Image 1 (cartoon, helix red, strand yellow):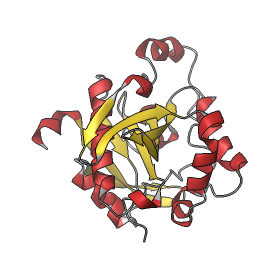
Image 2 (tube, rainbow, N blue to C red; image 1 turned 30 degrees about the vertical axis):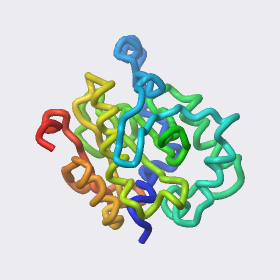
Image 3 (cartoon, rainbow, N blue to C red; image 1 turned 90 degrees about the horizontal axis):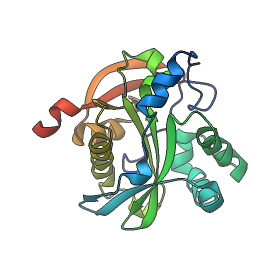
Image 4 (cartoon, one colour; image 1 turned 180 degrees about the vertical axis):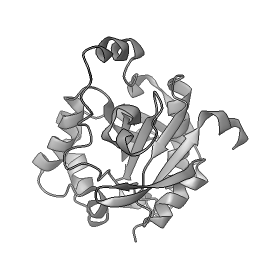
Length: 224
């Protein structure tokens, strides 16, 4: 089983890219516009971890596609993300988010300026995931892939998950919870979430996997 320091797996709860959200009514669109779907990770700044300063940089396909394609074709990564193949496969997955309704933002994780991870920061309450758990307004979901093998097996998974959850809570004041849904069979991944301040709320059956619903509560942040 791959190390949790490698990645948390991409979602398998829909047959289409995860960025296909439930259809929004015309009446809801002004409210969503007023609420700012996801704010902007580009402006969140850096956060210090034990491994260096981590910063999220929204993906630009003209700049990042080759790097991301290489990561997706790593055998360990492919086992969970299922995006191995030519660059067109990765591009389609990322472009669905870039050209979507802005409820999901794909980002590179830069550690001391060097790209070393891929993140998807998304509004879980506007995502198909919300059909499988009692979502609350502004719940924010995260997925993580550590792309460079030299950064795996060093305990970075826990540090990065804690750091990005902190970034979300620091910069999204309306978000009361950060959520994730790793496969329950991926014990190391679940452990990384638990060690970074998440709790396992319940187990949920998603198409393709049984997942641990991991939640990090803003209200409990100061108790960690």
